[in-house]
Amino acid sequence: MTKIKVVGAGLAGCEAAYCLACRGHLVELVDIKPARFTPAHSNKDFGELVCSNSLKGNDAFSNACGLLKEEMRALGSLIIEAADATRVPAGGALAVDRELFARYITKKITSHPNISVVCREEESLPSEGRCVIATGPLTCGALAEDIRAKLGGDLHFYDASAPIVSRESIDMTRAFTGDRYGRGGDDYINCPLEREEYELFVRELLSAERAVLHDFEKGEIFEGCMPVEVMAARGADTLRFGPFKPVGLRDADGKKFYAVLQLRKENAEGEAYNLVGCQTNLKFPEQKRVFSLIPALRDAVFLRYGVMHRNTYINSPRHLNADFSLKSNPGIFFAGQMTGVEGYVESAASGLLCGMHLARKVRGMEPVIPENVCMLGALSAHISGVNQNFTPMNANFGILRAPEERIRDKKARYEYLARRSLAYIAGYKHIIEQ
Image (cartoon, rainbow, N blue to C red; front, side, top):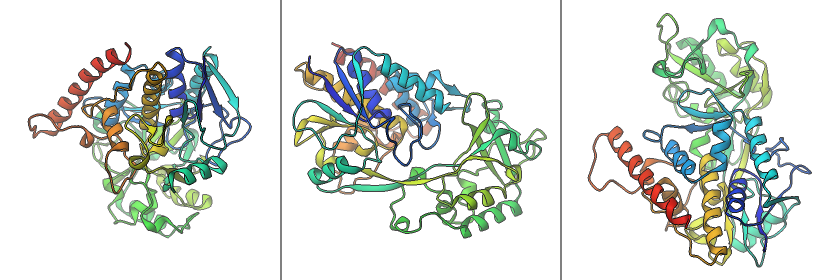
């Protein structure tokens, strides 16, 4: 039996490799770890989360990413299985202990009898055979040059991560626990700011020195991971209507605040907390200075500072079929964020789709492309449909096929779309497993 090569052991690559292996195919998973790391990676395990530890909302009936996760659960997703197994409290979101998450994925991959792991740097696209390229948005070196040469250039945008602080260094006399509207118990630590404190924070944030200044003024920042300083520059109250939104948050005395920064657990022990929505490109000393202006963080110990990096993605509508295979060579599949699906879950979803489609091709069967009544189908349509201004896309209800009859109430419309999607996935699962 010929081995199928999967290049890249991130979320998409591991999902594709595991999907293929569980369907009886031999897989060679190629990655540069542990011999080398990209500038954004530091963990020797596979499936490392670079930015946030949150996989976003988990409610399928009100959250588009939650619906996508439920579709993937139904189809046996390794990544969602790992997230469920290593979950940390985060209200309605699915957040994970990132080290346990990566360790879980790595163990599943390395212990599967149909997967062999090879530490090697791939330098070019294969000319024959079956292969999944899932090297991520930080693809570089000879492979990046080969992809660029064969696909006629690339597109890119900038992504950022938020700082992480030590739990014991947070001043809890200036903070309180709880999720919005009383949901989620003590999942979040809330750091309130009065008006004067908020305005000082915004002023200093805007005047702080950034690590990289050029290129970011060209509109190349992805909206979903916008640096907090860029967001603040849009208006004095932008943060108060965004990550510092105080709505639904009150302390034990019922007091409301002008603005509130939420902190989310980074690990199961609750020893580290992420500054929610505070992705940043500030220089490290400036991050400490500015974020320490928040009263509850005045003595905060920073375990990791926020960083920004350039992500590369291909012009998928020009080069990819709806099954994520290359139009010029249908034996080569692309998966992950480099295809223009944006987000952890979306990236893993593309890997799952590649695995399912390629498994059928190897058996001499045609891929079954999911319809855009489900999130998996809508993302497939996004990367393959006619699009003159192609940009990365998160899962959202707006990309699903509209209801057959207009539903004005948003909550009712989302619930209808979710139920229709999950009913479709139940039938889709039966088809692809034949």
